Length: 436
Image 1 (cartoon, one colour):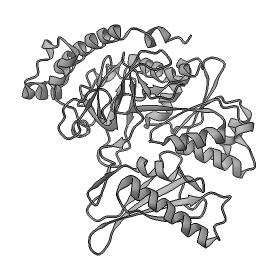
Image 2 (cartoon, one colour; image 1 turned 135 degrees about the vertical axis):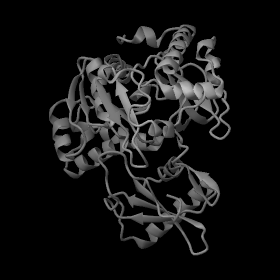
Image 3 (cartoon, one colour; image 1 turned 135 degrees about the horizontal axis):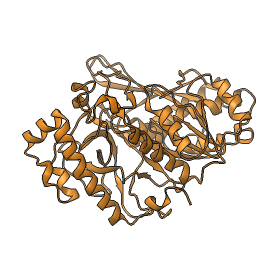
Image 4 (cartoon, one colour; image 1 turned 90 degrees about the vertical axis):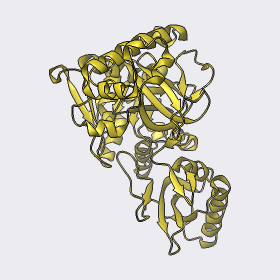
């Protein structure tokens, strides 16, 4: 039994009581302490003192990433800066960075939320937690670090990079839990194999907690085979806390939301209307007890659904499905909506190619979108067998056409020819003029 088992198996009616009490407090705190919320609540005719049911939160206006950017850096803080212990930021690569602030209470909750993933894997004081998410302003490193400490693990703050050094530590220090992006875990595994090390036998890993980018079931299966461990997906974002908002249990059938700290809605991303459990849409989050930067109906842009029914593990917190992508990384190709994860799902059905790929978008002279998928052949496949390569390219193209209803030109490339990343892999290069 984990330290948090009582809350994780609490009857859902009691969870909803916690959520309602927390939402009532949060919206009033936001209204009385954050000028932005007072203005937007008043403009929307939303009365923060009139919340009576959980559904009443649907009367509040949405909060968007642009709102956070417009109020950079401290405009959405609900406490004085002297009460803030830590600050993180998004990368800001597509605009002004968004800022996350944490009080002492917020940091404690953050650690507890991430630690749930470790508890799901029956982890604790006998585990060595190897954290190679990037430390610093990115929330991945310290979020996993606080989770390891909260779960009682011996925690190694490796941060990202120096892959051969990571491998030496993994091999010699008895690390049993690996926390990083899934693409970096794959890079560690592949590099170890190139070094003549069999990570499935020579590492001591039994679970990996991987997030910050989508990955397919096939990608997960390949990781689990190479590293001989169980892979759990973790979800979070700087704007609401960081990793730990939701984590998979060992059943691997969806990510349990930390419902005692966040209230989730799924909306139609176009109309903004709430959708019933089971339907795919955009995840919207309201924080229940966050102090420094509480959020009310934050539109995450992440596409998922609430999985109906109870989990086999017996925990009562509802589950979101693994992300389909984001409303802002959905590719519109010749008028068809395509997510990179759909392409990955098809590609991974071919044993001859590896997990490393890149989608390149261009336009031909007729201004029609053109999609080229570059994918690496596996090292064991003879790249000089031209006819076999051509046949494989045609087969992948055919399956992509069936799955996406879009023509994709497939180009098989040599192993290690696509750039590796120590953080999130760059899967899409959009060279269409005026698109990005």
